Image (tube, rainbow, N blue to C red):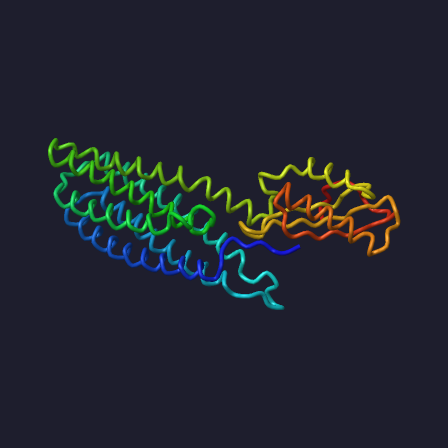
Length: 303
């Protein structure tokens, strides 16, 4: 059965170009907001700058992963670098949560000792963040739907755009109402939002890296379906995992109730391949046929 891939070489090149543009924009935003935050005294603006800096790092990781994913398989790396983008998604999601924890600590310190802030600077630098990150979000939005790596970069940029919007609102409240406590309060909510956005992606990428069964596949139902195929007695020693978002692999031992020839088994194998692909989205299948072989027949066996 042919292999199924989520993007072409051309789309990978486009992803790389979009990430490079976003990296440049975020370097500009980070430098500007650090200067603005130090001059104005705004923790929220500095926290936004820190988040932007984490964006730069995450985008670089995503860019490297996109480039690595193009490398072909070799004898030394039989899967190539197909997992590079999943690893990048994991790193990016973890960095979101680490940055959030740091921001919560800093917000708590500032809440205990509030400071007067130059609100006009906060407003202008927040506007810069909204415009630049908004442009980057639009660049990556399409690719974020079907690629975990691009989705991790998109989430970084989208949350930063929202963070800049929150900083803008805070700047306006400080400018016109003198509500300086809004600065650490906004920082806290920005941090909580980062945790909320990063948590699901961290779990999803961890599941793939740990070779867990994909959440959408019911192994007991799959076992029953394969066992219902003609000449199949049972399926055991079963492993199902994702290599990346495009490839779901299954390997198992399959016990036959008839001593089939290799040619006859190929007919059975094609039927199983078609059924598993159509019903479960499994596109890489390795089955070891057995007949009257004495070994454990339970579906899951610890190797």
